Length: 110
Length: 236
Image (cartoon, rainbow over all chains, first blue to last red; front, side):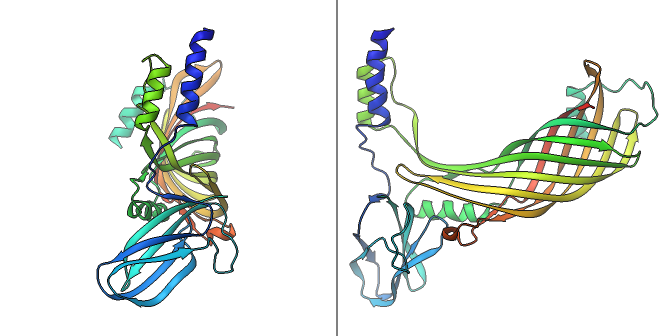
């Protein structure tokens, strides 16, 4: 019995805690970060940060006219009141000419 | 209605007649409940996650149960009070990675492989309902009754969202309304000396709750929708 546990325990530990090379479809961030986005055509761009209740907690860019191509922006994990947001899931919406063209997801934690 | 009758016939024997006269009384019972809540905000939230690249799965049925007290006040009027809860879930899960599978197989000498799913994001919405309902008995035959009623429902709701490194939760409460039709059948079975009754209820509940936390900014959990309940009651 003891020998079986000796084998099982490391396996369970590795499975549940360690060796986690998961490629979650979202980034885990702890500090200010930069993200990129592609615009298929020239237009007016808005970048909003939404919390897990789908409320807009920060406007990163509003009514910004940008050419097509690759662009980057950053978020310092602050809300509109310049207070660091609580840990949780956040979403950045990239809007081009009033159409959502991309949604990016981030897990913010300390 | 025919289906309801058939279902009741499978779980309870018809009342044997006995004393046909009505006698007021109270019963206590336990029910199993299923409902189909609107949850539009959670559907929008799931859509947002899907747009972000996650295969976010959201349930469509909310399961739960309740403890109820049913009282026959007269031959035509009946009341019911209940305390119950329902659960609505969703989430995103992933299969274990190849590396995790490999370690699992090696360390368990091939006995196990990590072919299961790992919950990455879990959404759990819960509603605790306090209901009070008055019914008018439409039909009463020996051992069988059909009644329709309505009443208020007060809902305490919570929303919990877990990710690998974070947990977000919010709560709220609100008043709603419930209307339903119920079918009750006396059984020849007895629990000791206590009479046993089976009940089937279907209706519509309107109970939308706003999450009151500042971060939620009145995010609405709409538990409104049709429901069904199946219960067993014993006489007091």
